[in-house]
Image 1 (cartoon, helix red, strand yellow):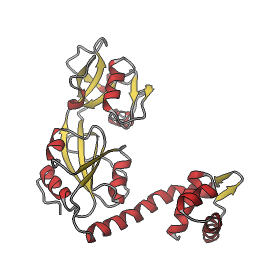
Image 2 (cartoon, rainbow, N blue to C red; image 1 turned 90 degrees about the vertical axis):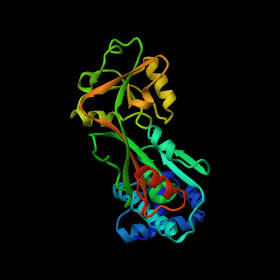
Image 3 (spheres, rainbow, N blue to C red; image 1 turned 90 degrees about the horizontal axis):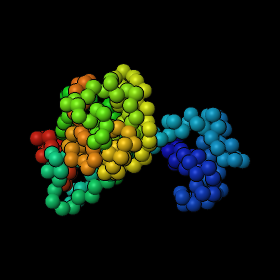
Image 4 (cartoon, rainbow, N blue to C red; image 1 turned 180 degrees about the horizontal axis):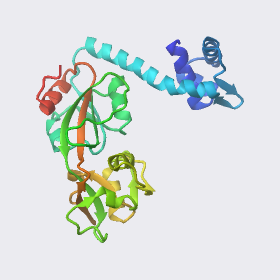
Length: 290
């Protein structure tokens, strides 16, 4: 399949409009229609209904493949450009909000850093596509086990930090005085569903082999301060790395004692990092980044 045609198809499907896709891509509407017709002829199946513009069953299946395929192409381009280009003076770091622990902050250069706080799914994609020099992703893991990251492109990963995790509760919560908590005992508690700011509920379910972990409130954001304020106000429990859960006004951080899991942070890069990224990789891993 021609990637130009595939990109046109993805844009039309996302915008549900041939004219809007033409404006975004810088094509004429006639050219967009020709791209879709050529792709449909190549695959031998209609991909879009026209009124309204929506993917057919075959089109939906193609969309499942198209995102990873186009990202791989972007990653290949970025990797070659990165190899051929002169070293950049600055550093763009894509990170999840709770991955910026003390070790990471201490390894950053004093100037020239652009920090992009993204979701756990977006960080590997940004590194693969070359819009970030380095990425930081965090999550729950058994001690010394790697994180399960989306397979978006061939990326190099390094474990750079591990720390205990804590349950954040309002000070008046019946369990706030406990010295430690078992996750199994909290399956039916009221939880905050904040997949991009806290440790996701799906990871809690995986750590215990199932369980409800029902969401009392969903927070679609990446600001940890907002998340901890919601927990302190009694809207639900949340699980955070110990360093992020300490000293929250109106809340108590109780260590998680079982299962035996930790908060793990991994550093991602594609190919051989250059410029300021090389020094950050060296400081965090003790390696030279090759």
